[in-house]
Image (cartoon, rainbow, N blue to C red; front, top):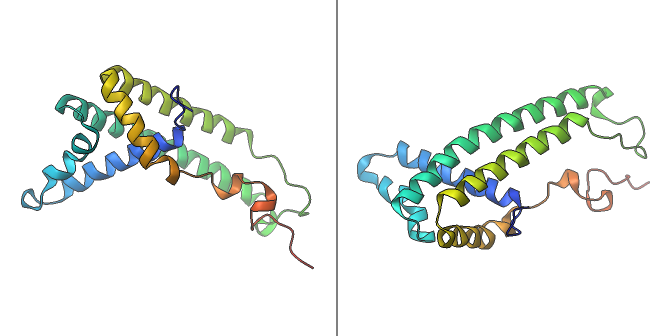
Length: 164
């Protein structure tokens, strides 16, 4: 959670969207309108040219770093699942604790996101950062949800006991 109350996952989704639009703009021809893609955030949030460039730079640093952490987490999860025969738990009533390494990777991901948010806060005027934060809250917060694996067992259809 940021100081303004915006969950980190909303910023991560936003950074990915910024990076996606930049990659798309780079992939299309000069006549297909990449300028509109590159200036999307300026128009919607009201950023200066300098702030838009800083946003793109921060997103360009953020996304691959987060992707690398998520690849490490995927490897840990694959290895953990592989320790169970056919990927099934011995008994449905005893859920083992997740690997401690996943908690460390989550902390790295959260710390990295917090650093990049702080970089934005330092690079933008207070007004621009407030507009950006409000934009993320209104456009990304409702779309960033808790993964099903983190829901309580009673709400997760994959972890409920089968009916007999």
